[in-house]
Length: 103
View 1 (cartoon, rainbow, N blue to C red):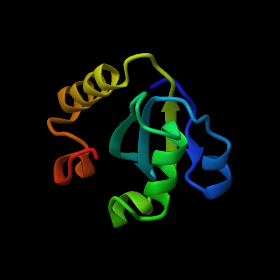
View 2: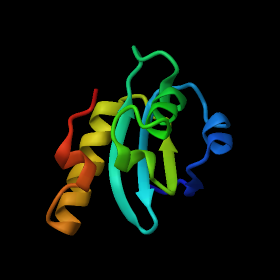
View 3: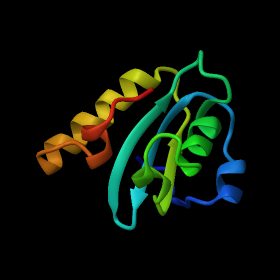
């Protein structure tokens, strides 16, 4: 994604929009998870990032160091595209995408 990486802190997450789209969680220089917030999910990307930060999905995503977000009309399609691009480049999906499914 062309969006800048921001620190994965409560303050930075609170500044994100409550719109739908996709987001990427990083642990230092490695992408660990590519997620989405669909239109029917209340709170959008901000709510999803808050849950990750609180450890409600996985301990590993709670320890992310940075995140990126992208507000798009079709989050599922964009997420699939990002996952496929990552797999084509690295030969696998991001670690946390392999161990759990998006809720």
